Picture (cartoon, rainbow, N blue to C red):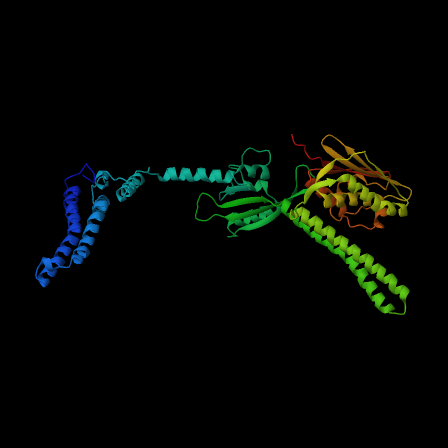
Length: 489
């Protein structure tokens, strides 16, 4: 038996008996067809030629070859052909009533088509045996899934009924709308809203507005350190008698602060670029008016143009450096950095500037300074900014001292000056882009307010930090701390 063993007598008249009687006959016909065709060819040839002895031997080969090949293929594929015939019979009765699984299965399937058919039959049976979910169970499952979805959302979400009472909410809504309370279920959401947010909520709840509305909520946070900006949207829920609207509150404080910083950055950058561009344009006009006759006036104009061009180039370069560092678009070119050589170069570069300004510049360095691992150009630019600022903001007669301290795992480079100092309320602001002190003594000193922002970014990129100690009218000390490379074990 090839299809099932538990067969029923029904109008199918025993599927197995019908199939097993027909399948062998079909296989015999498949094998007999080429044999019969060959015999007919040979008989016709004998009749035409006057006997079998007159037939060309090649004809026997031509006729016999397909017969032999057919018999070989039949022997090799007999089992698969038999199974295919069984599957075809099972398909014809699959939708008949009272047909059992046993009647549809092919016994001894092996690894051929009968095995694939049996897998399909089993899958069909398993699908029909899935548990039936009632409407109540489905509703409970949907409610549970809704609660899980709400709890996983970072925004505050509340679902309210027609009276404005909360019927469902997540944990975030408690902390955002009603800090200190355990639950909002059953409470009127109006008591937590005011102003435009309350008006928008009332518009949707009353049906005056049939679309989603949004409003910004500005409030001070619990620490009173900055304003929080919350975006509340209220949307009506239609075709549901139990709920009326959904309320979602999203914290957009960081987004707004980022936008504000970007606008401030553009405004400051525009202001800083405008000054040298204006001076260049004015002195170009003056040089043109002076012509060939007034060589002195023309030379002075060209000197100013050259100076302002260098200033403009420096501003653009610093802007690009800051932007690329903050965006992470500029990768570090890591390698060994000989700090001792960098400090020697700094001493040579700033010796004449310090002497011209009447400032004493001293490098107090240990006999040996370890080699760091990092971006040499960025570290050099950072030290250049720190030493340059120290000299620039130190009055004549003051001093600047550069010290290096080699600790166990950190190299500290301190730049100490006796300059004008920085007020306590401005010490953290000096790292902001384009910040300039309100001190009247600073207004006359040229600067873009980008050097310290760049220096801190470089320190952080190398896993270090930039620390400031300052006292107004007594001086400042900037300390760059950089981790030393770990030695191989």
